[in-house]
Length: 235
Image 1: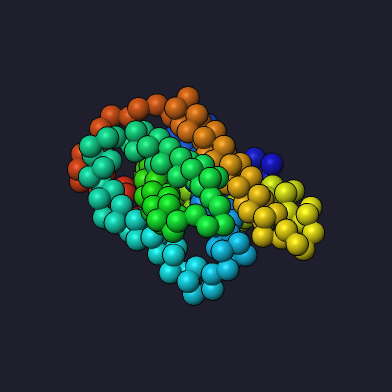
Image 2: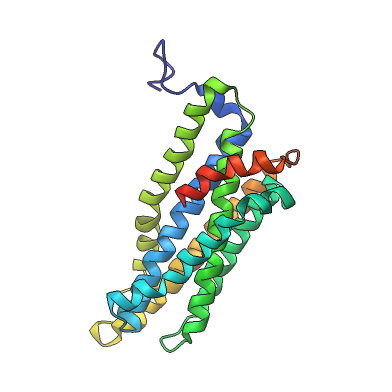
Protein backbone atom coordinates (compact mmCIF):
# COMPACT_ATOMS: atom_id res chain seq x y z
CA UNK A 1 0.00 0.00 0.00
CA UNK A 2 2.83 2.39 0.82
CA UNK A 3 4.73 1.64 -2.38
CA UNK A 4 1.63 2.27 -4.50
CA UNK A 5 1.33 5.83 -3.16
CA UNK A 6 4.87 7.19 -3.44
CA UNK A 7 6.36 8.88 -6.50
CA UNK A 8 9.56 6.80 -6.48
CA UNK A 9 8.64 3.39 -5.04
CA UNK A 10 11.32 1.02 -3.82
CA UNK A 11 9.47 -1.78 -5.62
CA UNK A 12 7.84 -1.33 -9.00
CA UNK A 13 4.60 -3.17 -8.32
CA UNK A 14 4.07 -3.87 -12.02
CA UNK A 15 6.90 -6.41 -11.79
CA UNK A 16 4.76 -8.49 -9.45
CA UNK A 17 2.23 -8.94 -12.24
CA UNK A 18 4.72 -11.22 -13.96
CA UNK A 19 3.91 -14.80 -13.10
CA UNK A 20 7.54 -15.80 -13.11
CA UNK A 21 8.32 -13.20 -10.46
CA UNK A 22 5.29 -13.49 -8.20
CA UNK A 23 4.68 -17.23 -8.29
CA UNK A 24 8.37 -18.02 -8.54
CA UNK A 25 8.92 -16.21 -5.25
CA UNK A 26 6.00 -18.07 -3.69
CA UNK A 27 7.75 -21.36 -4.42
CA UNK A 28 10.95 -19.90 -3.01
CA UNK A 29 9.22 -18.88 0.19
CA UNK A 30 7.78 -22.40 0.56
CA UNK A 31 11.02 -24.29 -0.08
CA UNK A 32 12.94 -22.20 2.45
CA UNK A 33 10.22 -22.16 5.10
CA UNK A 34 9.54 -25.89 4.92
CA UNK A 35 13.17 -27.02 4.90
CA UNK A 36 13.70 -24.87 7.98
CA UNK A 37 10.62 -26.35 9.60
CA UNK A 38 11.78 -29.88 8.83
CA UNK A 39 15.18 -29.21 10.37
CA UNK A 40 13.50 -27.98 13.55
CA UNK A 41 11.25 -31.03 13.79
CA UNK A 42 14.10 -33.45 13.14
CA UNK A 43 16.17 -31.72 15.81
CA UNK A 44 13.36 -32.42 18.28
CA UNK A 45 13.18 -36.01 17.11
CA UNK A 46 16.89 -36.70 17.39
CA UNK A 47 17.42 -35.00 20.76
CA UNK A 48 14.11 -35.53 22.57
CA UNK A 49 13.07 -38.92 21.16
CA UNK A 50 16.34 -40.63 20.30
CA UNK A 51 18.36 -38.95 23.07
CA UNK A 52 21.14 -37.77 20.75
CA UNK A 53 23.49 -34.99 21.84
CA UNK A 54 23.56 -31.61 20.07
CA UNK A 55 26.92 -32.56 18.53
CA UNK A 56 25.61 -35.85 17.17
CA UNK A 57 22.54 -34.07 15.83
CA UNK A 58 24.68 -31.50 14.06
CA UNK A 59 26.83 -34.15 12.41
CA UNK A 60 23.69 -35.96 11.24
CA UNK A 61 22.51 -32.83 9.45
CA UNK A 62 25.76 -32.88 7.48
CA UNK A 63 24.06 -35.28 5.05
CA UNK A 64 21.57 -32.54 4.11
CA UNK A 65 24.27 -29.91 3.68
CA UNK A 66 26.61 -32.20 1.76
CA UNK A 67 23.89 -33.17 -0.69
CA UNK A 68 23.02 -29.51 -1.24
CA UNK A 69 26.68 -28.60 -1.89
CA UNK A 70 27.13 -31.48 -4.33
CA UNK A 71 23.88 -30.57 -6.06
CA UNK A 72 25.05 -26.99 -6.38
CA UNK A 73 28.16 -28.14 -8.22
CA UNK A 74 25.97 -29.64 -10.95
CA UNK A 75 23.05 -27.21 -10.79
CA UNK A 76 23.82 -25.39 -14.04
CA UNK A 77 24.14 -28.69 -15.91
CA UNK A 78 20.86 -29.93 -14.48
CA UNK A 79 19.09 -26.72 -15.50
CA UNK A 80 20.62 -26.96 -18.97
CA UNK A 81 19.44 -30.56 -19.29
CA UNK A 82 15.94 -30.32 -17.80
CA UNK A 83 15.09 -26.66 -18.18
CA UNK A 84 14.23 -24.24 -15.39
CA UNK A 85 10.63 -25.36 -14.93
CA UNK A 86 11.38 -29.06 -14.62
CA UNK A 87 14.29 -28.36 -12.31
CA UNK A 88 12.05 -26.37 -9.97
CA UNK A 89 9.28 -28.97 -10.01
CA UNK A 90 11.74 -31.84 -9.52
CA UNK A 91 13.38 -30.06 -6.59
CA UNK A 92 10.07 -29.43 -4.84
CA UNK A 93 8.95 -33.02 -5.43
CA UNK A 94 12.17 -34.41 -3.96
CA UNK A 95 11.91 -32.11 -0.95
CA UNK A 96 8.25 -32.98 -0.37
CA UNK A 97 8.65 -36.75 -0.80
CA UNK A 98 11.69 -36.96 1.44
CA UNK A 99 9.96 -34.94 4.15
CA UNK A 100 6.71 -36.85 3.88
CA UNK A 101 8.54 -40.16 3.93
CA UNK A 102 9.84 -39.38 7.40
CA UNK A 103 6.36 -39.70 8.92
CA UNK A 104 7.20 -43.39 9.37
CA UNK A 105 9.94 -42.53 11.87
CA UNK A 106 9.94 -44.46 15.13
CA UNK A 107 12.08 -44.06 18.20
CA UNK A 108 14.25 -46.96 17.05
CA UNK A 109 14.25 -46.26 13.30
CA UNK A 110 17.51 -46.93 11.51
CA UNK A 111 19.73 -43.91 11.02
CA UNK A 112 20.13 -44.87 7.37
CA UNK A 113 16.52 -43.82 6.72
CA UNK A 114 17.08 -40.46 8.38
CA UNK A 115 20.37 -39.78 6.60
CA UNK A 116 19.03 -40.79 3.17
CA UNK A 117 15.86 -38.72 3.54
CA UNK A 118 17.80 -35.64 4.65
CA UNK A 119 20.24 -36.00 1.76
CA UNK A 120 17.38 -36.19 -0.75
CA UNK A 121 15.73 -33.21 0.95
CA UNK A 122 18.95 -31.21 0.69
CA UNK A 123 19.33 -31.98 -3.01
CA UNK A 124 15.69 -31.20 -3.73
CA UNK A 125 15.86 -27.94 -1.80
CA UNK A 126 18.96 -26.86 -3.73
CA UNK A 127 17.29 -27.54 -7.08
CA UNK A 128 14.16 -25.69 -5.99
CA UNK A 129 16.24 -22.70 -4.90
CA UNK A 130 18.08 -22.57 -8.21
CA UNK A 131 14.80 -22.87 -10.13
CA UNK A 132 12.95 -20.14 -8.26
CA UNK A 133 15.94 -17.76 -8.36
CA UNK A 134 16.14 -18.08 -12.14
CA UNK A 135 12.38 -17.66 -12.55
CA UNK A 136 12.33 -14.64 -10.27
CA UNK A 137 15.14 -12.76 -12.02
CA UNK A 138 15.00 -13.67 -15.70
CA UNK A 139 13.07 -11.97 -18.48
CA UNK A 140 13.36 -8.51 -16.88
CA UNK A 141 15.01 -5.30 -18.01
CA UNK A 142 18.51 -4.57 -16.77
CA UNK A 143 17.31 -1.76 -14.51
CA UNK A 144 14.88 -4.18 -12.82
CA UNK A 145 17.42 -6.87 -12.00
CA UNK A 146 18.47 -5.45 -8.64
CA UNK A 147 14.88 -5.13 -7.51
CA UNK A 148 14.01 -8.63 -8.70
CA UNK A 149 17.02 -10.11 -6.91
CA UNK A 150 16.00 -8.24 -3.76
CA UNK A 151 12.54 -9.81 -3.98
CA UNK A 152 14.01 -13.31 -4.24
CA UNK A 153 16.12 -12.74 -1.15
CA UNK A 154 13.09 -11.30 0.64
CA UNK A 155 11.18 -14.50 -0.11
CA UNK A 156 14.11 -16.44 1.33
CA UNK A 157 14.28 -14.43 4.56
CA UNK A 158 10.52 -14.43 5.11
CA UNK A 159 10.49 -18.18 4.51
CA UNK A 160 13.28 -18.77 7.02
CA UNK A 161 11.31 -16.75 9.56
CA UNK A 162 7.93 -18.43 9.03
CA UNK A 163 8.87 -22.09 8.71
CA UNK A 164 9.67 -23.01 12.29
CA UNK A 165 6.71 -21.31 14.02
CA UNK A 166 4.24 -22.73 11.49
CA UNK A 167 5.30 -26.37 11.76
CA UNK A 168 6.03 -26.05 15.49
CA UNK A 169 2.49 -24.85 16.13
CA UNK A 170 1.08 -27.76 14.16
CA UNK A 171 3.33 -30.26 15.93
CA UNK A 172 2.51 -28.80 19.35
CA UNK A 173 -1.15 -29.84 18.98
CA UNK A 174 -0.03 -33.46 19.48
CA UNK A 175 2.45 -32.85 22.29
CA UNK A 176 1.89 -32.85 26.03
CA UNK A 177 -1.42 -34.72 25.99
CA UNK A 178 -0.15 -37.88 27.66
CA UNK A 179 1.80 -36.41 30.58
CA UNK A 180 5.44 -36.80 31.49
CA UNK A 181 5.33 -40.59 31.29
CA UNK A 182 4.76 -40.52 27.54
CA UNK A 183 6.64 -37.34 26.68
CA UNK A 184 8.82 -39.01 24.02
CA UNK A 185 5.78 -40.60 22.35
CA UNK A 186 3.94 -37.28 22.35
CA UNK A 187 6.92 -35.53 20.78
CA UNK A 188 7.21 -38.25 18.15
CA UNK A 189 3.53 -37.89 17.31
CA UNK A 190 3.91 -34.14 16.99
CA UNK A 191 6.99 -34.50 14.82
CA UNK A 192 5.14 -36.86 12.49
CA UNK A 193 2.18 -34.50 12.18
CA UNK A 194 4.47 -31.55 11.56
CA UNK A 195 6.40 -33.42 8.87
CA UNK A 196 3.15 -34.45 7.20
CA UNK A 197 1.94 -30.85 7.15
CA UNK A 198 5.37 -29.75 5.89
CA UNK A 199 5.17 -32.19 2.98
CA UNK A 200 1.61 -31.08 2.20
CA UNK A 201 2.65 -27.43 1.94
CA UNK A 202 5.51 -28.37 -0.38
CA UNK A 203 3.02 -30.39 -2.47
CA UNK A 204 0.92 -27.24 -2.80
CA UNK A 205 4.00 -25.42 -4.09
CA UNK A 206 4.44 -28.17 -6.70
CA UNK A 207 0.90 -27.46 -7.92
CA UNK A 208 1.66 -23.73 -8.02
CA UNK A 209 4.74 -24.40 -10.15
CA UNK A 210 2.81 -26.70 -12.51
CA UNK A 211 -0.18 -24.38 -12.93
CA UNK A 212 1.27 -20.88 -12.83
CA UNK A 213 4.85 -21.28 -14.07
CA UNK A 214 5.15 -22.31 -17.67
CA UNK A 215 8.00 -24.06 -19.40
CA UNK A 216 10.52 -21.53 -20.61
CA UNK A 217 12.86 -21.86 -23.58
CA UNK A 218 16.01 -23.79 -22.79
CA UNK A 219 18.82 -21.55 -21.64
CA UNK A 220 22.32 -21.82 -22.99
CA UNK A 221 24.88 -23.49 -20.77
CA UNK A 222 26.60 -20.19 -20.07
CA UNK A 223 23.34 -18.43 -19.24
CA UNK A 224 22.20 -21.23 -16.96
CA UNK A 225 25.51 -21.25 -15.13
CA UNK A 226 25.41 -17.49 -14.66
CA UNK A 227 21.81 -17.56 -13.41
CA UNK A 228 22.43 -20.49 -11.08
CA UNK A 229 25.48 -18.94 -9.39
CA UNK A 230 23.62 -16.64 -6.93
CA UNK A 231 21.23 -19.43 -6.00
CA UNK A 232 24.10 -21.81 -5.23
CA UNK A 233 25.75 -19.17 -3.07
CA UNK A 234 22.47 -18.59 -1.21
CA UNK A 235 22.04 -22.27 -0.43
